[in-house]
Image 1: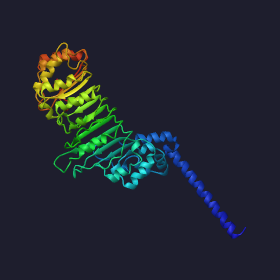
Image 2 (image 1 turned 90 degrees about the vertical axis):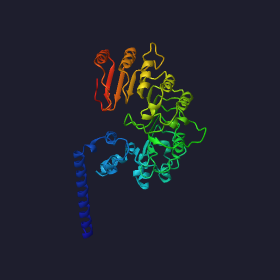
Image 3 (image 1 turned 90 degrees about the horizontal axis):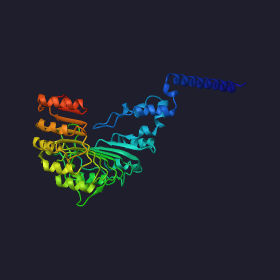
Image 4 (image 1 turned 45 degrees about the vertical axis):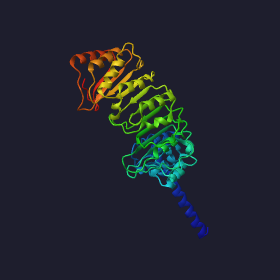
Length: 405
């Protein structure tokens, strides 16, 4: 054997030994790492359970959350992550560079997309979604509280698969021109024919929409307008109802600080929805409504089973009087009644309502700020205890959950 052949033989032996060592190392790693021993379907599901919840107002750090955190562990975990398109379905769009955004969307493949913008996207960012608009299932866009940018970018022509839309922090607080936002929001809604749920949180732009605009959303069942984090804070304009027709609406939460009773009833008659839940006027502006206006709205909703309302004491006492009538034509199917007040209503009138509705009403709540809670008299408390014993769930107390009864 020549020296060259002998050298080649030694090289081959060393290579084989290295391969064996790598094979043994891989086997050892697979014994130590249970993920290596699991079928891909199961390891993928474990990874999916580690995804962070949808962001509310600020994005989580990408490097420390799924799926990016898996990419830094080892090759095996990277392969699992790259083989799981659903792991890339939640897209923190404006937290990614244009190159990484393109790569992220490629890794998502044909999986439905949930896209989160923490500032109004510009044309370049929306352009990255060209070809993916049909996969978009959930979309959340937050405004920019510093620059108050008015642009939402150039919208794709249609979002045929979009089911939920959330817009936050598009409120005019004296920081820039927002006069085009409502028009852009209505334009966005017109491109979501299969929308099911829509939330406007702290969205209060100026009114600037072409006359005669009417967007029909035949599948929308839930619309929430205003800040829902505090009962007494309404920060959102429901004037957008002037431009919508929602024939399938079942849940509506609105502040009534941007629309008149007449415009609301026009929306209602135009839509004729089977409403089940109404959160009415979680704002001080709602206390300016008269009972006649409130009653006119509620009489148009015979299918309602859940009502949350805040209003002044005169309006609430008139509401209690109407609900206590026998028989009552107002809300005949009401099962859940929640009231927020700043000035206490008549407990005697309230007791009449609960006694009259005890066969249908299953839950009643009377809530106030902690410094305004009024405790019922002892004889009222005795009657309330009897209703509790009969199966009605009753809470009277402050907004922190502290009972006064």
